[in-house]
Picture: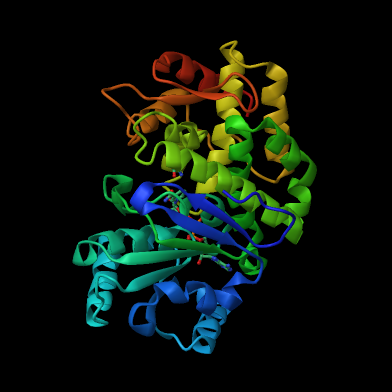
Length: 377
Ligand code: NAD
Ligand code: GLY
């Protein structure tokens, strides 16, 4: 793994034997994508999948760089938004790719946020029993989390991300300048996943976030690049240790997600509460619950809550617009795909940077805790 220096280009490797790949991080990389991705252009072409919001903002940069490198491209533009991670869109996309005559060694480029990355990755995993794909993530959430690690999925009537596969990209190209056109609310939601890496096992990075998070959100390029690189290094390390979430190591990445899932379910997985916003509130709840159980110093829970609030993210049920009681929220948690043999694993903390998996949490205590949180609203 190359240790990043300042904002110069850096490469982080995901070490997975024959499925290993590099993540290239560089401001302006999108304008050099033709050169950087040329080794993956079978038959001198790419098929690019993106969404409508990315067309006016970023697609032209990719197309210009491919043209400059004499690489042909076909482009399929899908609607933006979570509803695109559906059977209907998967069918539309796979039909379009087959109509383009996609072959197994063709490379499909996913240019967009987590929605495009998850859908295209899943389509690539099933087309011709597996085509190559490259991730070019354009949201902060996708740059620090979803583009790395090979989780691909669509949603079903029964819930989010229930139909999918572990399928790794052949390369990830991250250009922090693509964030310049990202709406501020989406940027903040992605920042929750940045903070998550500090809370899991890197207290020094959490302290860096406290000092530099404001600059990052305001547009500071060096801060953005540092946060992306540090996050990607952490994710690459964890995925390299536990690709399929079997040892419990990768499960640490779900910090805040069990509480967050209940909030997302309560708001109908809608724009009322973005995934990253739910994770932010979920992390604050996980730390306060840990403190209440005597596991974590209360001052650490206060620090987490204060930073999430300072970043303009929800840190409580009230902030997240939730009025449901503990029983209702725990019932939502029971539908989480992380349920194992009737038990729900929780990510709790012994302090900042000391997250651990607890598979024996008493749900009655969670319910009482959430009722207490609700009473403060
Ligand atoms: P998203 O893909 O819906 O993007 C958010 C919005 O920003 C969309 O409207 C999009 O069109 C727009 N957009 C994207 N890039 C832009 C840019 N540069 N400029 C202007 N607009 C831009 O949402 P997301 O937050 O990136 O991803 C959420 C999805 O990621 C969820 O479906 C979630 O389940 C999934 N996810 C997957 C993983 C994983 O490991 N695979 C991890 C976390 C989340
Ligand atoms: N976002 C959680 C994971 O990739 O495992």
